Amino acid sequence: MSIGYTEIIVIVLIILLLFGAKRIPELARALGKAKKEFQKAKDEVESETEEIVTDEKSEKSEKTEEKKES
Image 1 (cartoon, rainbow, N blue to C red):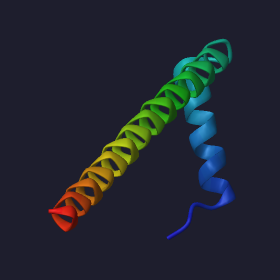
Image 2: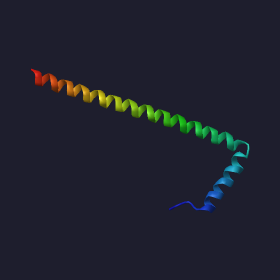
Image 3: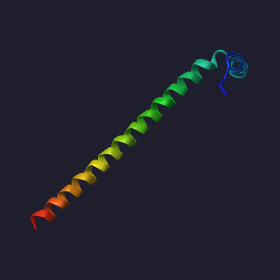
Image 4: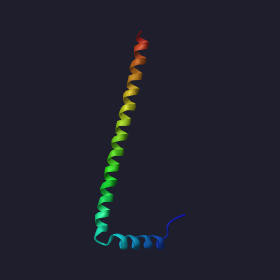
């Protein structure tokens, strides 16, 4: 199930009729900003998760070393 060229053209024409030619650049900018913010939030969550995992691994290795020394 893929979208063909005729379906894309129909969708674009409907969007033009609903929003008008002047609103489409504004909508595109808003979508671009939303995508950028979503990507930024996703990257922050990934980096925080990686940081937590790294911290937990280092804590486990420190505990293991302490047990070996005892």
